[in-house]
Length: 241
Image (cartoon, rainbow, N blue to C red; front, side, top):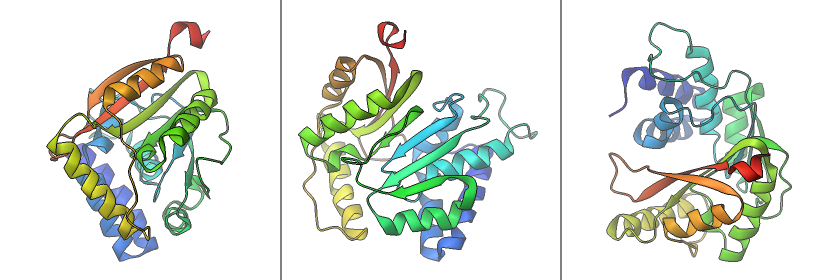
């Protein structure tokens, strides 16, 4: 269950999406409050003090909205003492294939973040302190996944961070349910039911290790029936130098 501090931040972030329409507002509110990922990003300091954040497959820009509201809330009496400070000078660039979602993100965030329509399998990635690939890669064929990860890894600054959320294909019923939901989400966004290209979490970790990252895996399905894993990939010492 979300903490009161997070609920206040998430509610303020969601209200921005009223500018993009009532349906988008309800989606944003439900996602921010119902998905454990978003509170984890703040409470565990996943973005650290990154100033250049690249959100690949950003959708409606929820991460950017959340971080902007967190910066406004930091220092208030209600900010939890055990939470780190949010990035103080972060600038988010979000890229997504769906032009309609990019338009919604722009309507909600205005000048607070940058959003561009594009196919992450082809779009160039600028140098970044934090690269996010959240619930995105399984829509790409296996070879394209590998190429995107290679380019994302190359974009990460020497002391930056690469963060993935993936479904663990070895996790049984929770993974199968999550795959069905992904099909439904894709259909609701105007895609035909896609083929999904999923891997066990161990396979993702090996891929990231081969690109020079040390990886921490964190379960990221608390309060849901799914089998998601958050992979925090920091450059291994030999790569960071």
